[in-house]
Structures are given as C-alpha cells and as structure tokens.
Length: 266
Image 1 (cartoon, rainbow, N blue to C red):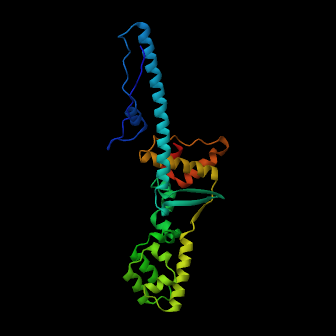
Image 2: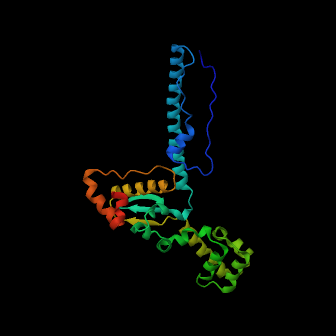
Image 3: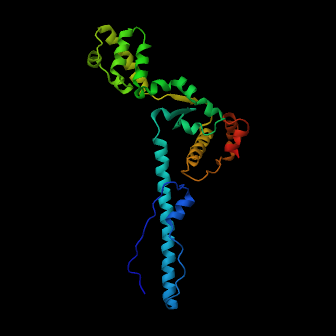
C-alpha cells in the first residue's frame, strides 16, 4: 500500500480570531488522525508511521512559519509609526532607537512621563514633524517668524501650503505665491533652510545610566508592547548577569518607582 498523492490545505486567518501562538498553531495543524486498522498489520504500521512523520514535519513547518510571522510583525510594528514616534537615545554613549509608545508601556513610570506629548514637544518634536504640518500650522509658523509682514503670512493661508511644500519652497516658489520684496524672500529662505535642517536631524535624548541595564529594560518593554498588541506571547522577565543585578534593580526602580517596578523585577 503506497501513498501516491497528498493534497495539503492551509487555513487562513479570519477576522476576529486572535493571533496567539496557540490559536495559530491550532488553525494550522490538521486534525489528529486515528490509527489505521483497515489493512494488514504491516501495512497499517507503515501507514501510521508515515502519518506520524508527516505530523512531525507539519509541526516543524508551523514553528518556522510562526517565527517568520513574529519577525515580520516585529519589523512592521517598529517601522510603521510616524517619524515623530521614533526616539533616539544616547545611553551613556551608546545610541539606541525605539518607539515612543514603547517607552510609555507603563503609564505611571518616569519614562512614560518623560516622553508624553507635552515633554516630547518641548524636546523639539515640533520641528521634527514640520514635514507633516497642516496649512494652518504652516501659516502659524510664518506669522510667528520675526520680521515677516502680516500680508505675507496671509499669502501662505491663501495658497494652503502644507509643511512638505513649505520645506520645498525656493525663491521662484515664493515669488509664485506672491512674495515680492527681496528682503522678505531672503528672510523666508533663511528660515526655511534652518527649518529644513532641523527637521532632518534626530533629537537625541541623553540617558545617564548603564547601557547594559537600560538596554535590558528597553528590550523587555519592546516585547511587552508587542504582547499588549497580541503579536507575541507574554515575555519572560529580563535575565541579568550576577555582577549587574544590583545596578539593574536601581535603574529599574529609578524609572519605575514603587509598585510599578514589579512590571520588570517581578
């Protein structure tokens, strides 16, 4: 008795079904097959062994698919945010990049307060998102720029220029929208040049703590955020080498005072 052909189907995800590892595993795995007993003892044994081998291969394939999907979800989750969501940290000389939402996983932590909307704007996020300005924000910027007449600011309102268009303006463009005075054109070009330069630079926040300890915290927060978004299973607590445990606990308690430290220390 030989198996000449086998047809394999893959079950796709359906809307409303949570994508946890266990549920994805159940969706992919074919129903458990009963032991074959219809043929001779030797034939039954051969068929059952083949099915057992196929199930092992199926389990291995499921595991690989889940690993690839988790990696894809992680990359997508990290890269899909707006530019203003990416934070560059200088941790005692070591550069780390993460999303602002990662640092805000614990609402009552020092990190969450440090990178809330108000504080982050104060650190320079306003200029960083100049390319995303609405026409109203562009006109406000022009109106608040020193020595620019009100009638010039009105031209920007009239033409409804976006932030991206503002940064792209040159002398010809300014003349096209109605700016005529040479001095005003020069002032605007100088201010736009400064804005463009600022918008292309990263705002780097200094963290004066051990890169090893802070890196452990950051790695855990990344996994915790992905878990909260149902991308991965619950992450284990950070594993820290013995000679760094005391320092790690101090850094955790600094950023996560009181009971909030239990999130990372357990």
